[in-house]
Image (cartoon, rainbow, N blue to C red; front, side, top):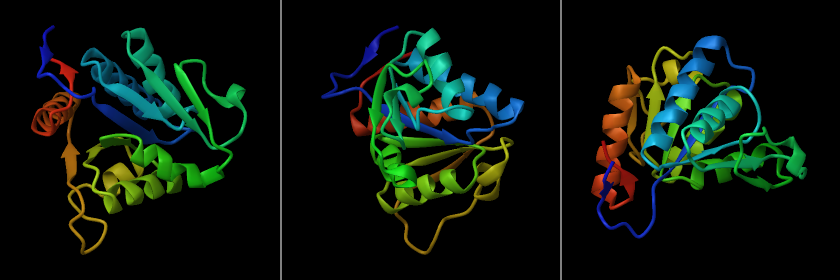
Length: 181
């Protein structure tokens, strides 16, 4: 697959969702992680279980780089699929870091922690891609905005192919590196 553009750096995407996700969300997170890795897009998560582990596992199996930004101070708290582990000791405040460490955010389901990451992404202008049908905030926010400010795009994605199209278009318009189709 050819490399698109001569980037200053490669794209980074944060995948957020429940640590105790249902099987549907786990499957979807794996497909998202695999797709991102196939385009050499770094996968960033909160580094724990559920959606985070599923996305990192699939990305690593596809040859990708993964980053786990932990809420704790212990490196060993990361799931075994994190290539790079960043222990913060910040508790839920680390959600600001997971949102800001990436060029874009992909939400698969999600509860209160996911909502806080979505809010940080919104405030700081990160495009947000919601995987519809995955439950939680991804379904609740589909087609809506978080408040009156227009800080970033919230894009509903009905399937992986639509997500892939949106992400690659965003990378191209921003001059971010990725491996093409």
